Image 1 (cartoon, rainbow, N blue to C red):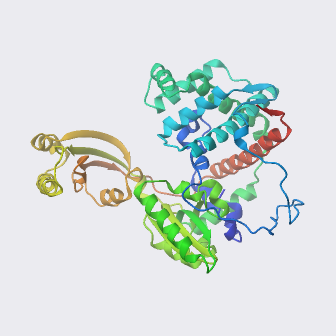
Image 2 (cartoon, rainbow, N blue to C red; image 1 turned 135 degrees about the vertical axis):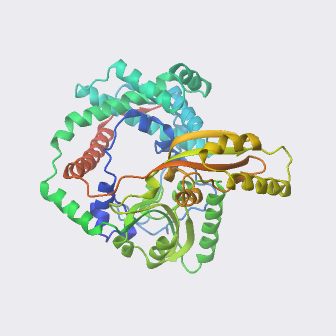
Length: 480
């Protein structure tokens, strides 16, 4: 769904999510490989610890408006210590062992190359346990509905996942053992994903309907917005009264510096945001030009001036400050030049250890002279030999996967031209030679069937969330 923060919930588009839902016209794949790569499982952003940023507290006399009968002057009897529970549970008589949790944790840490302190590690274990409980409930519910997954299907999915890790099946098994995980742990995740999606197709999708009037309304709104800009934004918001405005401002400036240095990702600090989007890594999703008016003026103006990949802030907004990150930008229903597919040759020159910055700068000047004199891609091999450079060919690189600075550069290049050299004295320098470009097809209105499919998928996902909530509520779970 299109999801502006609850602070901006007056936006009608924030409720229907039209532009984002239809612009991604590719069918929502439920293939196991896309989700089984653990870097995109959602755990990474959730489990990162709260060290480094002071928590925001609520006054003792405040009562949250959550529809519960909570007294103002409440008193806590006893102590809740999550560390007392061992990471083991019995879910409707199905046992989740400590080994199950450890193996999944180890795979997540290895796949994402995480370095966690003890507090972060404990938080990851608790989140993994919750995920394993959900997987168990999904498998159980599928079996109750007589939905089964054959061993051959799991084998095929395991093979696809191995390919995503650039490994054979045998190499994948060895890799899992080497990081403290197991083939059994990964197969369990595959089975849960396959079983749950098959259950949804049989028991939920047949009861989801989309009227022709709904589809027509969405297409009409897309037609009216065609050619206007859309901005994929992420935000971190912290409230700040006059007495602590400077402290919050300084903290957020430090956040930006850490993000820009690569010390921590944006999603890490988004966990401290006071906007409702903190659960999704601060993601405001795609915001159209018309919807920018629902943001504070300072954020709207910043978004219009930002380049893709840029972080702006701290920006003063009513009640506090925000950090804004422009993930991507596009025009509604128009072809995006960054969807072009490039054929590239990469030249790499390594510098000897201990080379000074001055010597590296002089060497790069020589390299620039050689590449400027190069006549097309046919001369790359000769130039590479003269420069003692390595050459890597790639015939299918999308512009948008390149760093933002390189994107702008290659889009302005002609076939046969080379980029300026980039890199460092320690890692060597590189230059990209453009050998071909296939431009994306022209944009246009989606077909009615595409719009209908997209809406159906959203409604299936919403119902799936409801079913899983009911399963959690009714489950008998014993922690040990």
